[in-house]
Length: 307
Length: 273
Image (cartoon, rainbow over the protein chains, first blue to last red):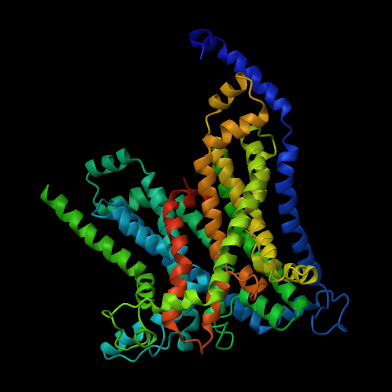
């Protein structure tokens, strides 16, 4: 490299070079493929769902057809199973959020402390997030929660208690436990990252001022985590609104509709009862529900891109 | 000094206890995979036993297991490759030549990720049925590519933004053409970022269980679908299920551990730093 003279001329030269290349590179052809495929992926099927939701359309009965107006919707909205599924969906989302954010925060504080073998313990704690949903659901269902041969049943019996028939008596709660176990590491991982970005000088200053561990947690750590917690809640909500595989392999939505959420109801309507119109109407409702959360999430992300 | 040491010991104890409880189901599954079927369902549960590799041999001998694993690999890698191929130019353009609309575009891409899959299940299912894409590998590859594209674009964008502009400018000064700039400067510089993006995409594809359960049955079924077939009540083969599951999750668990940092970036869309 040619030493000092080049360095001296660099600013102006690079500025013009930058401008030149900016003019030369046409970004449209570079971005267009991504935009086009995503547009097709999102808008076309969504428009079809919307269209089907106003049609009489049953895969098994080709004689049924034509414009249905709002009939699919009125039928759906007066159908108690929709409200059961809605209630189950919200119940599941709420409790999984409470468990994962609550324990996630505590665990994040814990794993922020120095201790022996911390990095290995942390690896173990985040492991469930990488286990495919069908595996985790079956491991819990068979080996832990099975009313006869499961480990929990054994523990209960050794304590002289009757074994709990998890999926028979508390189907939705059992699904919640499994899903919470899968998502706890997610909350932990993100909240831990957020805690570690906390200025250590600030912590030190608080400690010097005599803040105990509780004051430290409530007045320093928790306020700092506020944003991260809200992000965890929003992202988890979006994914939890459509929990599917865990229900599919454990309860199949039953007994009755006891553990059917909105996503599973749509699946039942569409691919088991072949009622495309009705299922599409339910699909539109699911999209609206998710979009309410998505609006807040997008806003929060936008704020960060601007930074 | 003494209370500090005591605190550290307490944290060690509590920390390991918590980690142990969370990890226990996985540990139990791995343990069960080394038992015989009789030991697997024995009560009281056996903690000490003569480990056997019999289940792994059985699982490996069943040709269909290899078939499902191969599907998982082909679909995950294929979709990741395709998504990266489409995403690199877009991320490059947005990171280095941002316009007025760049931010909106990025947010719009991310928002497509927030649409619930079940909302488009029916049209996709019907389109797949009519085009013969049901239970084909390429069908699932297309779906997974589109599913992960927003995250891949987003992550590549953040990695490209971190590449020092001075280096690219210096290259330009030395007469590098745009193509050379991308291939000989940008790519090598952001290789770690591209690699961890690809890793995250593979993890997400590997574990995806909505589309795979609904769009595949046997020919193109990945491991998620195969494992789900153990849910039938008569299929009470816990030891074999455990062995099959252990092999199914092992590579992804290692990938996940390797990429925990980037994972936060990718899964929160940069909303948490």
